[in-house]
Length: 141
Image: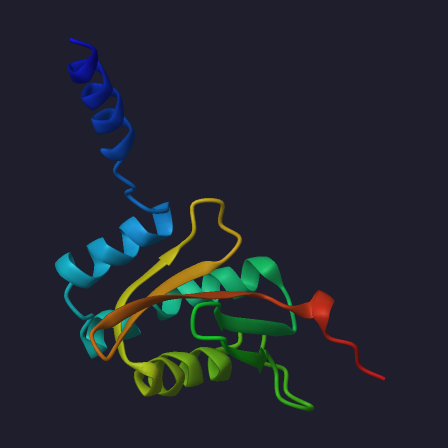
């Protein structure tokens, strides 16, 4: 009887299952269940970026993937430009930056609306990129 109790105790301790973080779960779901966005679907997200940039009103934005140590800083307006919604920035982001990294799987505003979350598949593995305002980190002299 004592022997069975020990086995039960040991079995219980060793049967813990780690499911990972929410990020790991999302990454797994994206990789297995989400198809790549078409060029048309990506271009339809342009309005999301326009509204986001209009709302946040920053001059600089960052595209960041912490897992890949990959970041790009964008300036909303060119020197001497009056571009009020960052059209050039959005076109470069959607038509050059994202396709050059991999296959875009998802583009959505985060739940708290402080960034745009972009999932990209690179060599069969999915990575989360964030696009967010970056003025507070830029110092111009």
